[in-house]
Amino acid sequence: MKKTDPHYHGNDPRYSDLTEDQIPLTESLLDCMDRARPLWEYKIKDEIRRGNNVLVVAHANTLRGLIKVIDDIGDRQIQDVAMPTGVPFVYKFDRELNPTPPEGGSLTQVHTSGTFLEKPGLLKEALRRQKEWKTQVPGFESDEKVSGSRRVTTLEESLLTLRKEQEAERWVANHRVKVDGKDMDAELRLLDGSAYQVAKDAFAAPRFTDDPSEFEDFDDEAGFVDDEDSFFAATMRPLPTARPSGKESTTAAAAEKAAEEEEDDDEGPVVVLIRHGRTPHNNLGLFTGWEDVPLAPDGVEDAKDAGKLLRRHNFKFDVLYTSWLTRAIETGLYVLDELDLSWIPVVKSWRLNERMYGALTGKSKKMIANIYGEDQLKKWRRGFTIQPPPTSSYSLSYPGNDYRRTKYVKDIRVSFRETLFRSWEQRKFQLHRKFPKTESLKDCMDRSIPFYTERILKEAVGKGKRVLITSHENAIRGILMHLCDIPQEAMNQLHLPNGLPLVYSVKGRCITLLDDGSGKDPMEVHDFGPAAKYLFKPCEITDDFYDEMEKKGAQQQKEKDRETVSA
Image 1 (tube, one colour):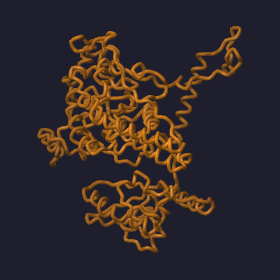
Image 2 (spheres, one colour; image 1 turned 180 degrees about the horizontal axis):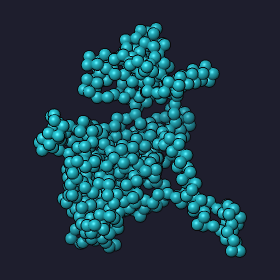
Image 3 (tube, helix red, strand yellow; image 1 turned 180 degrees about the vertical axis):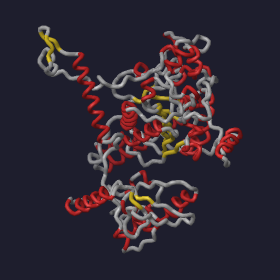
């Protein structure tokens, strides 16, 4: 491959940290396998020494390169090793990091010590089918590409389809058309004879919204005055104008102009914050907190829509920060998938987790209101320093009983009391950290704000990187409190919609929304609560703003001079 080739990888931003000499123009099978060796020597072996299980998802030849190193297989023998698509190949190691031989009856292959996690018949059929396709289908390679990702199996998809059909039947049964007093079982038709089409969202799950009563008890002293003089509008970034494609920009002048426009779009560091998409708990009105629930189907659409909106505005990111909870992680990955940025680094931290709701976790908000009263519910939900009742050390909702957290969280101080009790119970020493059993809104913000200032700001924003944060309402509210100087007394009056990108301009110190092309006012579509006026303040005008205006003016003058010469 030549460097002028449009497929030259030096033009791909994912390889921007490589030098020109490190980017291959072509590779032999041996070259591909040799570059897998440093990964084993300097990364994977270190993780195994620490007692961690390692999952490697890669391509056939790079995996064969790792197998070649692990089992010390020769150049000729490695050609006998196959890696079927989608079948796990597992290695176990002794204390010296030597691969242990497979047990008798295990499904393995020649020259290797790993074992397949698959039924022998299915694996044999997969290998046969792969070999057949490779010989009969032109251009087929063993690394099959799977378009998109599936959240359900074929059986689950069939059951979901059946459920939708049953719901449709019930809907039709309740909305039958009567002619002369008789039910018409034929398809529904309008008066003009055309077929009646059921709206796509007719059977969509209802979107959970906060109880409106939560935003009613505010007064003038707190700064919330509901009159015409206090009206404000959110700044909305318009849709970018369409640009000519690379095929249309064939002249040197057009290429130069496109480069200038691309440079003009580079606004330096930017931070986009997105609250995760909806979950079943959101739709059912349950306290979620640290309970690890996945996205609901409509929550997946929330995340995809956010990615599509960012793509329409030509957003690119260098790093994703998210929590340890599935719903936030999935939201970030769906957004990146829409942007074709699934390859960027992902940093996960428990400090971006949702607020820990203690004994309320998993319980219905309406049920809590019936038991304790609406006033107490509001205090627990929106009180800045009020903590809900703590959960028990033996509760499933206590984070300290989750193996994932007890093993990997290292930045929480040790709990002497929990360590003593658990060591006594297990009859051996069990170091236990002081995981939260309940949190107020302030407690949640006391961990999310420092994570932004000490990690995100120093590691990414301060170095000019473009940052995407997918997290939870209360963690994001804390970050916004810091970024937008929102007063403490207003924090319990700020609501963040699910799946909506909030764009923070580092230079202008302001939050903007993105134009979705619908022509609707986003402040009428989304409910941000009375404290929204603190969130959507006018952007600051700095010296950099005037420098940018001078730069744009010079570019416009340059374009006019070029057009004059061309004429």
